[in-house]
Image 1: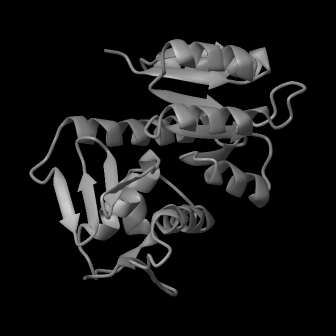
Image 2: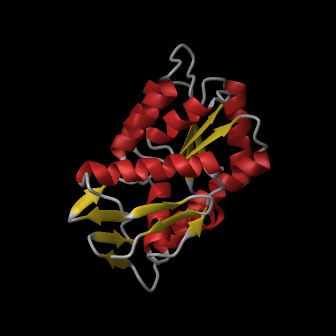
Amino acid sequence: MKRRIAIVEDEPAIRENYAAAFRREGYEVEGWGDRHSALESFHARLPDLVIIDVNLADDVEGGFELCRELRGMSAAVPILFLTARDSELDAISGLRLGADDYLTKDISLPHLLARVAALFRRLEAVSGGGDETVIRRGELEIDVDRLAVRWRGQPVPLTLTEFWLVHALARYPGHVRNRQQLMDAASVVLDDNTITSHIKRIRRKFQSLDPEFGAIDTVYGVGYRWLAD
């Protein structure tokens, strides 16, 4: 069964260029030029992955709002921003809204295809199952089959990337994971600032449930670790 990709981009020529590249790789692709038509389609049927531009015609923040609405519909569907807006503030804003990646349009098509393929590999790894599908570390419970994390019995609403980062850290408590190891575990390519932004978001989500949460430890100059109980 073909994976379904939705591209939300207001420039028809750019949208079709990306769509053609993904179709050549065997994906099914739908394209939308504005937030409202895309959202109407998503309510009817969620795609397997969504690529969003930030500026959508006169709706200069439309991509951010669409990401917020889409993340409210599903915590698991992968979301990538693909935009000409290359400021660090915009990238951080996109990640805070729940995107899995933030890319700029100067990225090459092969690189873009590789990033998307990596996200799909994570989904396939889940559907393929594994020896340890439920991991418990003190107050933490990770259900790999359901891509679900609970802390003190309460669900933590993590994105797909955040889920795999927590999984990589908590699987071996006390072991330091550098940024490359975290990227490998999450099957995604991220720069140092993006990893840092994801970790900050993860901490905030746990702290919203438990203000005393401190299980993710920063080892300066090296990486991060999940503190053993």
